[in-house]
Length: 264
Image 1: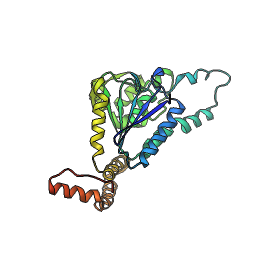
Image 2: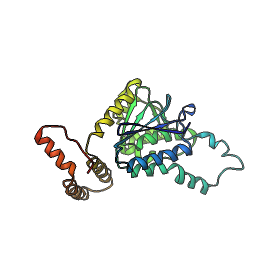
Image 3: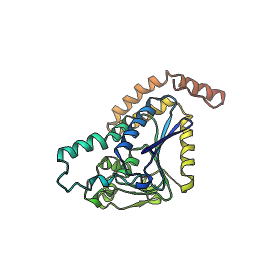
Image 4: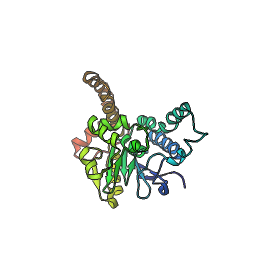
């Protein structure tokens, strides 16, 4: 079986981490396939959204610690080799996510630990099963958060709570994750995918260009000042108001009907 199973539900692509025997621990094949899937979905006008989830009873248990088993032996990689691997292999996903312009939703169906939690944090929205648990567990195995945890987590829960979770490696269950804002919604395990796909399907009915521009503007605004953000909005708005979907939205509003968007 492939380490990433990719399927389609209408205009929604489902990317399922597929190493259930290892709680979906990340492999190089999995990361390669996920990057490729995101690039393809970004370029495909028939895809409006990607949902990321895990096979079996876990979302992702993090990096595959089995490949670190010989780190203390004579064949251990050099510091430069370690840095190059982290940057060249592991961090490719974060860069691919940053370049992905469409909605990316994590359906966290079970434990998300270490790099698995970081992978969920990279997504735009996180929905969780009642059995989901989250932990930035790097410190428990003598490591630093290696896949963006120090970047993403404080932007979601604030600096103090992020440091608490990063320093302790404590697990957070689904209700607490909801309270912290780590996830947007919690569903019973058996309802998670149906509810996530229903939400993704709702997004699929929206205007694709406008959705992409909203995402760009939001993330850009986190890195800039108010005046720069407002200036960017004015430029984007001028372009958006020239689209066919803008005219369709106005016409549908006047005619009291549901708009049908073309992505143009």
